View 1 (cartoon, helix red, strand yellow):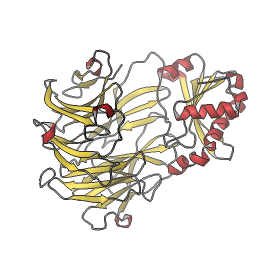
View 2: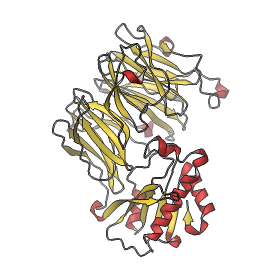
View 3: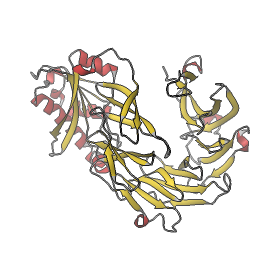
Length: 471
């Protein structure tokens, strides 16, 4: 089953279906794989993927009528769409059409960035950028809110480092000089917003856990970090995202694997820490400089994902949309526990269960881990996990090294020749749960998926007596 997209004419208006991906094919194997809305909300560009393929076909839907325009864009992969402020077209990235026999086997090389003007065929699209000298480069395009600049994030492979190119759109699409603003691939650069030629970026350059800087694009040496102005310096917490709404920056931090949101002014001074309902994960916070409010979603191990409307001036949040789940969240609790791994490293884990749990070593316990690829395991809601807790089970998620919970150093501490640290952390988590009498080896199950499957395989090989079941 796939999520549907609804549209409403106002915040209190009755939503109507804009697109139902479940009806796109008889067998349900065509998926909605991308979405981009024009600033006026009248046009909806969307990508479709068939049978799990990375190849996308993009179309454009008129929001008022629910009908598709004749525009069709093919051979798109690893790309979104970015509308121009006049709503007459959008930027996207694609590869050349592969040989039919090689469509699912050929290398992903020589991606090109194009502009598509509505009402024209794809072969008329304007080529914005290609680099035959760098066949593995890919391009993600965005347009600044003021409509003045095209901002291109240049990536290669899955590395957490990118470059940034900029093109002035005032002379016309594709006519301005393409400037290689930050060309060194020396860190991660996420464009936040701009005031004229001054660009704000969230970056890991010179700050493993991230910082917010201002880059003056007029300077000849703009790529030199010495010329940047630090708005918010690196903190003890890991910076995961920054947005500019209502003239203020909203900084989304990962603090001990749960969300912390700080609101600061353009000068970097703290206005407030946004109050969240508890230990959980908050996402969203998008918007524009002129907006007076924004929306975010909050979830935890005992809270279904709930959307809040936040007033930027007052700092108050109120529930906007909330799912109906047949349980009483006040009957459950999540605590964060820290334990020592084999080498003395402090590692956190979230322990969730019914309130009033008796620590007698007899509670069925499910311990889940991942520990790799800079992925942070943050609180989330699952009906399956809730059912486990309703039955009396303890649900535990360990934040192992190799993940992204504490920045790049934490990630690297669980990679390559240091991979054993991940297994040691997981085993230490199990030993702590047993020592604190949450459970016992006869009642302890462990689970992991993908890289977490490797983790579980190593754990049952190295310490088979510690676990009763493995998934």
